[in-house]
Length: 215
Image 1 (cartoon, rainbow, N blue to C red):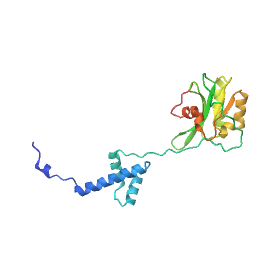
Image 2: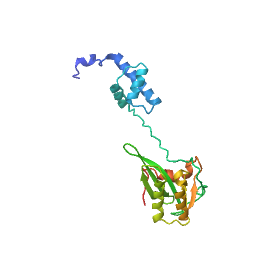
Image 3: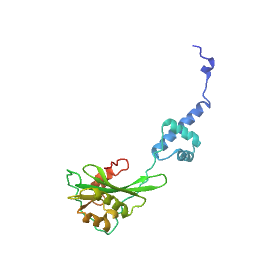
């Protein structure tokens, strides 16, 4: 078969002892990655050393790549709702509503978009029937002005007769300026129950930066 004789006598570099050591490290890495999914290779290396297992970070990185183990990045949570205020709130008018046409129910919400070094905030109003964004505004702060700009944009080009505006009980939506503009436009005000985000799932779903669809 024209195979060199040396093939029969080949031994991997380092011998069986090294292979066992590498296998032990791989097993330990797998366990650490399971217990701590957000750990990268440097933190895994530090954990191994605390367990009295010797391995440099380059070796750990190589093993993790070979095993297909990736660090699961933690998402930073940014709260966009401040419900701790003494402003007037309103009952939920949208809970039993069957939406059958455009400009019957608008849902308002605020989310955030991660940029390179910080966050920007997006206030959006969606028409619950068409799932279209009817008003939006982007800014660096969560002040009432952000929500107001989105509302002004929506009111400018849409029909507000027999319309319900639904939101959470955040301070932006309960502010005097926001409420006054809704009242002046003849829009009924509806708010979700405190601590129950599912009441406004139209807004939560459709104001995601990945799901925006503009009129």
